[in-house]
Length: 329
Image (cartoon, rainbow, N blue to C red; front, side):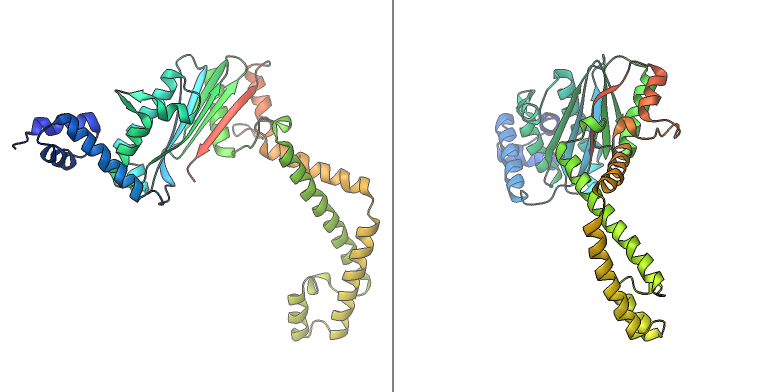
């Protein structure tokens, strides 16, 4: 049967499949357009099954908001290689899925996958992309923020995007700067109150142990110096052996250093004042909050003030109520 270029192009426009794949499908189905569509779908499903165990860590991450800035979404569409991930058609597909989410204010990934576009679900369209690209393709993330004002930022290259929700409408410039800051500084929470308790407990435990070991190490250094031994010559067993070989310390000094380290460490840890340890540990945890909480981080535009203060310079009543940061890998 003679298949015309117009038929091939029509099928290509409907399915997004390659020209040769569309021609083959029409030939196999004797020019039946609907049967050819099913043929291409089945081909995509077979390719998807074959590549199911492949790792899809490349792709595109893109964000957008509604015109009134009350809803924002980020989608991550994954593939296997950067070559496919940067392809214009692949990026367009990611944008189409994103626009579908934004236009319909879709709330979660499952709802987006089930949403129909021109009679095909988004999940089916993703499978079609697998057939078209020859790589495993996954719609892996949909992150949503709804707030009185939502700003978004897309980093060049479509590998990173952010959404930031504010408690009220603020200037577009200020909101955009905060969204850019979130992309650059990778905060884990809005402020200390927003940090999960599990994270707080873990950071406190690490801070306490680090403080205890530092105090013990200081006491050991003092005792070693008092004994006439350079602490840097005996700070590890490798250094002890190396420095004995160089003649910098004697075997007797090495053994004395070992005994001092063991005894002073045990005595110091047993007699540390817990209040002092907690004071230092609390300081470490507070530093962690300042470095990792969005509102408490130093502003990228003005390092002398925090992001909270940067926002309040524009509007004293404004603050961040939610944010999302999505990055490939």
